[in-house]
Amino acid sequence: MTPCQKILETVMQVKADIVGVSGLITPSLEEMIYVAKEMERNNMKIPLLIGGATTSKIHTAVKIAPKYNQPTVHVLDASKSVVVVSTLLDNRLRDIFVDDIKEEYEDVRQDYNESMQEKHYISLQSARANALSLDWKDFIPAKPKKVGITVFRDYDIKSLLPYIDWKPFFDVWQLRGKYPNRGYPGIFKDKDVGFEAKKVFDEAIHVLDTICQDKPVKAHGVIGLFPAYSLGDDVVVLNDMKTERIATLYGLRQQEEKERGDYLLLPFRLCLPKSH
Image 1 (spheres, helix red, strand yellow):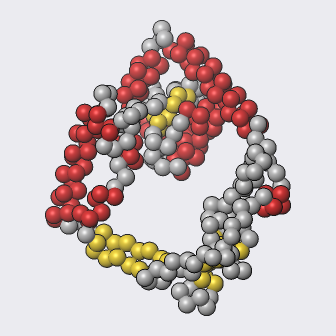
Image 2 (cartoon, rainbow, N blue to C red):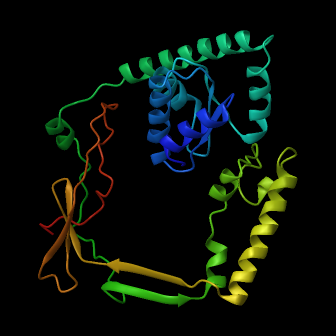
Image 3 (cartoon, rainbow, N blue to C red):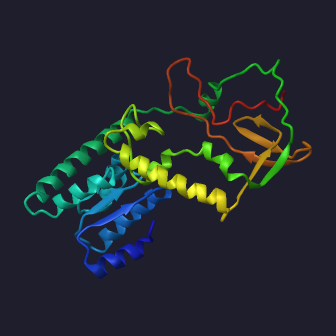
């Protein structure tokens, strides 16, 4: 995302009517909050539009809108921004639209706060007592062909193409199909975005074919497979000879109260304990 200071300087320089910020990665969410705070601190009086793959109406209503007293609107995709902008710039429609957004976002905040209050948490000691217990007695772990670090250099790019996750690509272009045509390749059949999705996809494939043929870039990769064991809530990683402790992965156990019989898990609990 463009730095906040650059955004504010440009807004004042060109005397912008509206500011729109778009975030494609999670850190952008915090930056958007900062932008809203700075716009409020600088006493700006123009609407702020929020968009991008990582954004949502809930995050905009709960985290961003309260930081800025002027209209703050989440826009689902680029096609919707045209309508929102034209409405905000129309003196006949603006006030009604802004009041509707404020009322809607207040409802969103109330629903969010109520949902958070409904959650009950138990002590860490109680959570650990309700951990999943597995019988490891007869378990024999599979041994990889190579332990330690493996480096892949100048890997065949063409062989990687079938593993591309195209969803983030279409999200960047703000192309979202509707069920049952949400994912790739079904999105091409969507009556609203299918044509445009196929167009940008074909363009991307053309670029990838050129990369595979001309090799302006190379694909390198690295993986590491190491012995490890669980110790309480954590996982201890050893070197390939099992003679040295090289890392500890610290686990956060679930503590939200659940129905009787439901276990409170860890992100990587399925790891052989040291005692075995």
